[in-house]
Length: 150
Image (cartoon, rainbow, N blue to C red; front, side, top):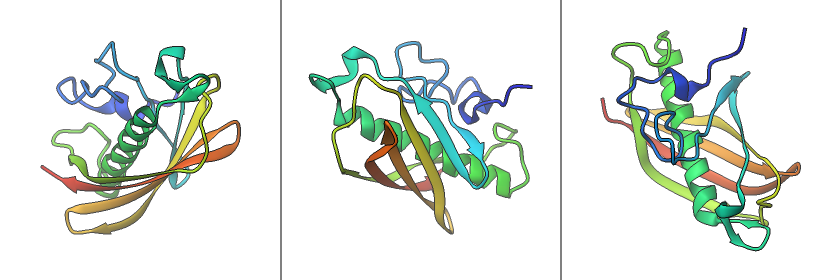
């Protein structure tokens, strides 16, 4: 049996995000999965995602970190509430803040891997840390504060 991506568990209405929405045919189509206590996603850049020859655009990196992290927050909140992600009504979290630190250039020619964990949960806020890897090397780090909106 194939594991279902976190993003594929949200309702049709909640699936239009440019970064991770399954219903946005022009988007990045990011897919995140639980692996132990962290979420993991593998994404394949295309030549039109570049900033400079061979180098992935920093804005794309920020979008990937943002979407992977907010999906982690949403899934963790629903998991904690002993609900299946996408159940009715799901807990909904959106980006309150996003911090990205670029460590090294990221190749546009190789898949990137994102790994995220919940760092802290306090009231309506969940803080998630995320790392992005290219060819096994950490090239960016991010931290997202996701805020519950329903």
